[in-house]
Amino acid sequence: MSLGRTGSQTLGPFFNVALIREGENDLTRRTKGGPQAEGEVVEIQGQLRDCDGAPCPSALVEIWQADAAGQYGAESDPNFSGFGRFLTDGEGRYSFTTIVPGAVPGKGNAWQAPHISLSVYASGLLKRVTTRIYFPDEEANAEDPVLSGITDGATRNTLVARAVADGPPRQFEFDIILQGEGETAFFEL
Picture 1 (cartoon, rainbow, N blue to C red):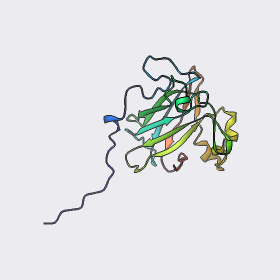
Picture 2: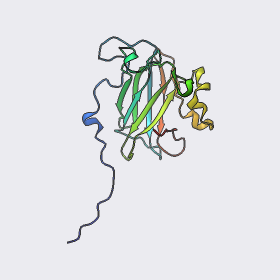
Picture 3: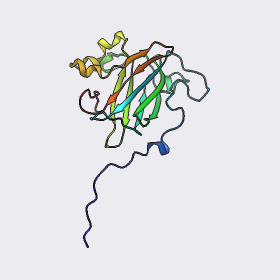
Picture 4: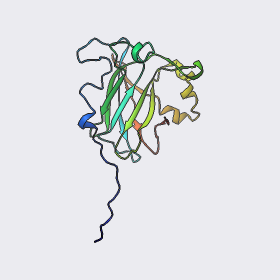
């Protein structure tokens, strides 16, 4: 007996089954209704799109960042979670409520501009992709070692969110394009 070949494809995603909990996209409080973290609260929203410009639904978007003082982990603001997750909706949209992070030291004691690290896990991706979100009004962006290391202006601009409302809270939009024209700059870990 001869069996036909099975087509190859990635399995999943199954992120919504066990990885997403309500409120994980709000980094300003460790618990619902708990005390709010120090710093300026902002909202960041965007859309995840593939190489054809089509939305990527059911993808997992994660962010992590320093607190308003530029601290991570145990030294961080006890009311700030520093990590959040969101499962994109049917239109590939995501949203986070967080604070503007402080500057953090980088290699060689060079200061990095305030930024948010971001990862995407999605159907068709065998490994996560990672990038950063920078704020458009930060003077420190000009000296940031990562941003200044990208010589192509169009590529560098894919890492800078767009201000869409003054607030409060201020609102920013950061679309993520996985491949093709306007592709977001991604980093190897």
